[in-house]
Amino acid sequence: MPIHSTAIVDASAEIDATAEIGAYAVVERSVRIGAAARLFPHAYVAEGTTLGRAVQVHPFAVVGHVPQDLKWAGEPSFTLVGDETIIREHASIHRGTTPGSTTTIGQRCFIMSTGHIGHNCTVGDDVTIATGAMLAGHVEIGARAFISGNVVLHQFMRVGDLAMIGGNVALAQDVPPFMLVRFPQVILGPNTVGLRRAGMSSEERLEVRRCYRTLYRGGLPFPKAVERLAELVRTEAGRRLLQFLRSPSKRGFLPYRAWGGGRDTSDDES
Image (cartoon, rainbow, N blue to C red):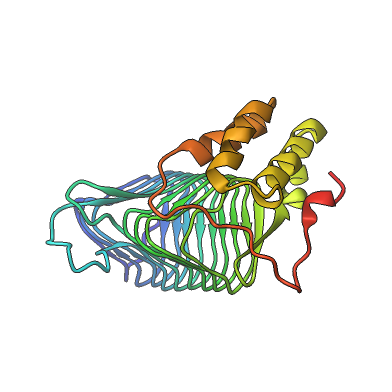
């Protein structure tokens, strides 16, 4: 087991024989590290953290440290990082606040340098969180979403599958799946490039565009627009969007806001 002689590893940690732990890395008690995982020099993996197979924790990243929450009273809580996720330099991920709760990061995520994931967040598979992006506590991010640099997400809000949030945006309301958000808090239309790259069929992409127009350009109050979607959707993508819109929301949904510098992408090539 390649553990550098200067690493500080608690005796209770469970470390796969194929994992690598670099110089001056710290592994606290009750940590589990999977096969082929790599902790670079000066990585810090805190108590109650589980790292899946082939996870990378780069220099000065902190995974599973105590939550930045005044309500935390020291009870055990956890952090779970899925297989093949990459956590770059100076990123920080905090474990749950309430006793027994977990901050969960999915598989194949890419958390760039200085990205922050607060306590009790749930991040789906294949999510990218770019440099400087910050997720407050209890944020939920759907699979294959892209959170650009210096984005700030309010506690308890949600971002749906395959949504893309442009850089330097601060959001406090839910972003439906498949949508593209740009500064200042404008839903421009579907994330057409992301949907094509994800292998979504032309029929599904067309339905997502129609859903966008109904929700944001049809002139209906948002609840009425959601009811209208229930009559229109026929594809799996449309049903996923509708399910998100019908599920409980603590923050409400981000509305469309007209902006002279914006561009409606709903007519882009599908």
